[in-house]
Image (tube, rainbow, N blue to C red; front, side, top):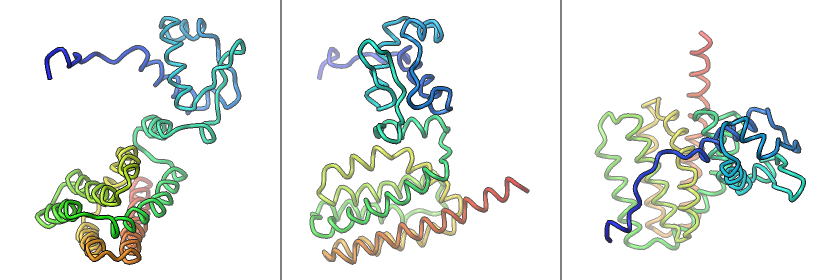
Length: 248
């Protein structure tokens, strides 16, 4: 690698600023599904940027499923629930400053039951020595923790689930998990505000690794479901306690 191979860091572009602010207008309801937005020239005036910046930004937003650019008819706002991409989910989280709505929280938890139970089942049949070594390394990190911070225990928990996804042998599963990394970490950091859940989770992790190592598909799937159900029930309890504290 030479110095010519590395591009210098650049400040955030006007296009990125335009995209973020335009997303906020849609997510706040200022622009509604089916509505046609002002012309590129008008948007440039409203946002204080050039027409090429608006054009590039709208193209990026179309790629995320937020808008449709129709020749000679302008730009139409989409219903992002029907046409949005994974990037749209990350945009929603960014707009809400990491605070998940009940609907989004339920959707994430339900998705994990399907997605991660299958990664565990596949890991039991496809894991290699290297995969098992990586999983046991995470278990050793967990056992070595003494009064860990919320950030540290959230990270090691995420690393465990990523190691299971990699052990599944499916190249898409770890990529999907990483796409949700910010959301997962947000959930985990709420969950681990109660230190009483840490050791039980680590015990569940050890049980899952045992099932994967033994090559038991059903056992691995059920062990992952035990982890997820324990997490969901306690997360809802913790969030309920937090809401109660805010009301008092």
